[in-house]
Amino acid sequence: MNVSDSERVATRLVSDGFEITANEAAADIILINTCSVREKAEHKLYTRVGQIRKSEKENNFSKKQIVGVLGCVAQLEGETLFAGRNEIDFVLGTTAVGRVSEAIEKVLGGQKNYFDLGMREESYDWSVAENQRHSPFVAFVPIIEGCNKFCTYCIVPFSRGREKSLAASEIIRQVLNLRRQGVREVHLIGQNVNSYRPPTDSGLENFRGATPFSRLLRAVAATGIERIKFNTSFPRDFHPDIVDAICENENLCNWVHLPVQSGSNNVLKAMRRGHTIENYLEKIDKIKSASKKLALTTDIIIGFPNESDKDFQDTLKMADYCKFDSAYIFKYSPRQGTPAFAMTDNVSEAVKTERFLELEKLIRLNQRGIFESYLDKTVEVLAEKVSNKNDSELSGHTTCQKVVNFKGSAEILGKIVKVKITETKTNTLYGEIYI
Ligand code: SAM
Ligand code: SF4
Image (cartoon, rainbow, N blue to C red; front, top):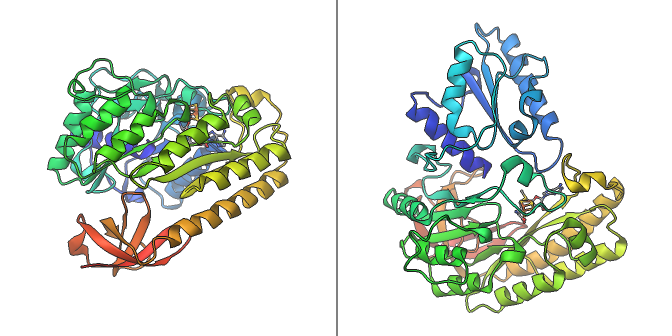
């Protein structure tokens, strides 16, 4: 979501006459887009701003660079970020980014400590200019912003506000546009895509489904774009009809990211996730028994307050049952302002590390089995970019969201090619183009 926000900010700035540069030293204005989900977000921000100011002095810049802070830390901390340090020039909250040019104009006009934490404009333009996308072939399409779930550990409902769905007709218009521009793969994104509830039926009239989200999936599939992925799903609202929609439509990709957070009902209850482990496993059984082979990934938090050894054993048991294709494991990190902040963070760092490593080992073991099952098989890969490590190799994703590296030249970038898998590593498959 942050990458997508940055793309839209860049789009807006260019259309207002600014020029984007990746050369920090050459910039008149530096924008820092922040995330506050984990770790010491403000600390990181101040360190970054400190580096910018230091380099200004060391290089004797003739004028001070304007520094603007955007995103979740901006929304949560607001004007307190100025705190007399004269280091940050303006602060723009998560729903105020459409007014980035106005903020810059204010600062250029001499206004000090300018901040805007206001609401998103009704006329906000969600589209991204072709040259501001992170990839020419893959595009993020936000379908819902904010979150109403208030899981007790999570800052998102405070930093991104309440859920607001975009009109289906607008989403479809964007996907059709992206398709015309040569985009092969779209990711429908939101904190909880399953909670998608558009203001009207417009754009969904001809599409059936048990929930507005599964109707939207069918509507986006009908645009004919080659690949559709979506992220993130909330287990409580993950309706089995989503799996049916994926199986019915070739272009709905075979990957579900369904964050479980814990395998223990005690912990899930304290996290206020709204699902039990039994509910979760029922959904996993539906996913695993689908007619298309679906890849499954998840997020898990270890060391939530009062997580006992038994709770952790339940998480191991759940992970072994689910056999995730991959998982993001996070150590619980208390976030000020969330309900869990009042609970004692009583699982020691040493125990968190121990549990993290044990869970990671189990997940890696299952993951290895899954990855090795691709050996000698042929997969379809979207050739997205020249590999970071080797410029005679290309890198891309399968429909099931595995990264694949293979020998190939830049001419085939943007094409979907068949690759025969010859080697596997922890998170990557390697192969050769199969003709
Ligand atoms: N909406 C998604 C869901 O409910 O599954 C997740 C969104 S959250 C931005 C991404 C992940 O960050 C979560 O799934 C969770 O595992 C992790 N996370 C959120 N708050 C955390 C915290 N306080 N400490 C550690 N991990 C956290
Ligand atoms: Fe955070 Fe829970 Fe909302 Fe996900 S569903 S963004 S974890 S509050």
